[in-house]
Image (cartoon, rainbow, N blue to C red):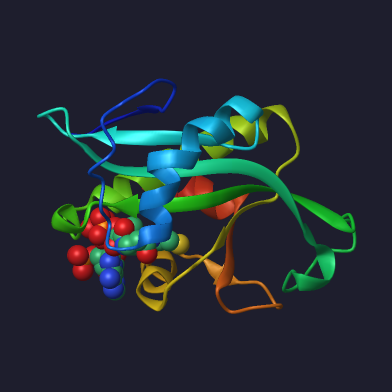
Length: 163
Ligand SMILES: CC(C)(COP(=O)(O)OP(=O)(O)OC[C@H]1O[C@@H](n2cnc3c(N)ncnc32)[C@H](O)[C@@H]1OP(=O)(O)O)[C@@H](O)C(=O)NCCC(=O)NCCS
């Protein structure tokens, strides 16, 4: 059973390795600084032994309405989104459902934000093709500017979270 909580103070993340140096470096050196500055919020997943096995980061953002497939006429030029900045699971813990649990948690946080302010989508820039397949499995579809730039609508998130 995973525990998923905000990354707010020093935790043992120095040995976190998901196989991608950029994502390892983010959690080891940038995540807490970014939180302090208000640029994003990182959540850590800890297993029953207390080991950090995964994380994700959320921030707010906008996307251009011209990049939204089937955009509605009411949509503003800058469409408000919650941005899933990074999501990673330790290499030796992948394919155990942890990434799914982190994604569902991020979706619930997005709904909480959407209840307070306008949010149309959960947005992600997928970094790698294998990660893209992970998001496709949960219903993410591409924006028009780049097939690696993807989103899930608030309605789709509500369906995913209740299933
Ligand atoms: C992408 C990632 C977060 C997925 O986490 P995970 O814990 O391995 O994923 P889950 O076990 O929840 O997988 C759920 C489903 O997603 C799909 N999936 C997960 N990893 C996949 C991969 N590498 N290739 C294809 N499909 C994949 C599968 O359908 C999988 O179900 P299955 O194992 O029953 O076949 C993880 O592999 C990771 O950290 N990768 C390296 C970093 C990265 O690419 N992060 C994303 C940056 S945008």
